Image (tube, rainbow, N blue to C red):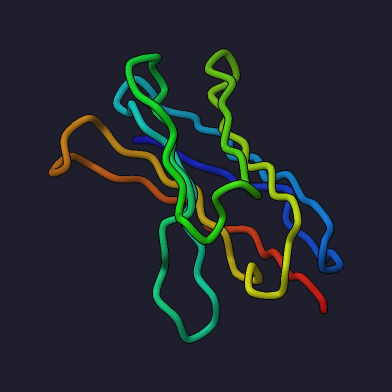
Length: 120
């Protein structure tokens, strides 16, 4: 099994920044990609960003966060980060860490989420 624990959420004014962290533990050899999703109240969970844990692929971002958010990793610590700049109230959501294997039909893992609230 793989366990994912998010941290770094909080309350910030519009235009501010936050840095989220996701620490993976357990059978981490089973995953090769990690990323972030977010879910606002009453809305579906949406993709935010993704990064491969190897050097064979590039990062991917939702258009709504492109240029403002940056995903990065520290493989030695089994940790993925999401640097969020120029935040606006539309970014308010619970942010979830996500991990998956190289197969689309393989197992997926989710953290419990961390709340990000951006005031206007």
